[in-house]
Length: 175
Image (cartoon, rainbow, N blue to C red; front, side, top):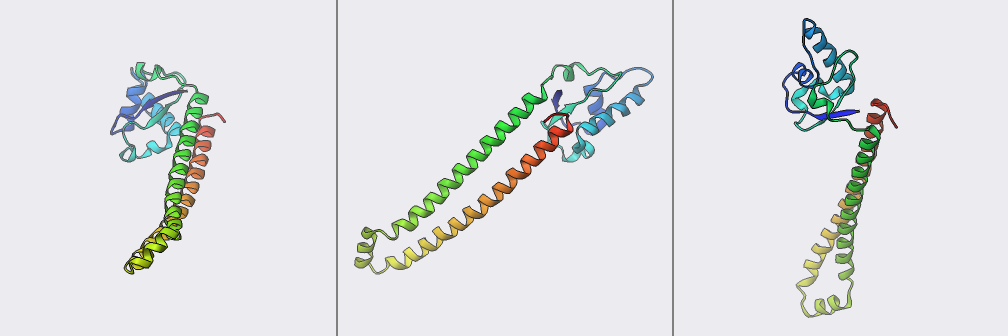
């Protein structure tokens, strides 16, 4: 499979001419054929206004048409791309899980500290502290609930990412 990146072309025809050798009396016809192949391989190209520069594009084979020099030099195996995408997804999951675990631990530590004998002795000496501790405890409980909600959202997002990755790999002919 060959890949390239989107460089901000305003028209699909501009992208097709950048990626394929389109010359001669049939240039208009060949451009349309290249555009159709690009859309089949990259359906999100239907609206170029919403495609950020640098987006990875699949450069499909088009029978009877040569790729430009730029597109020809970007030959990557789909298995290699799939492996890298899965590695990045796994790293993202580990980072999210680590961050969530840290946030949960901080909130639990705060709640545990409120039960400590040292703090209870301090409360006996200063009667203004209980009100502040109540606020801190309420905030820590709110943070715990927020982390649980975020964790659920992240789990759903990763599941959607897995689904999208599998669909992409199915679309480009592997996995």
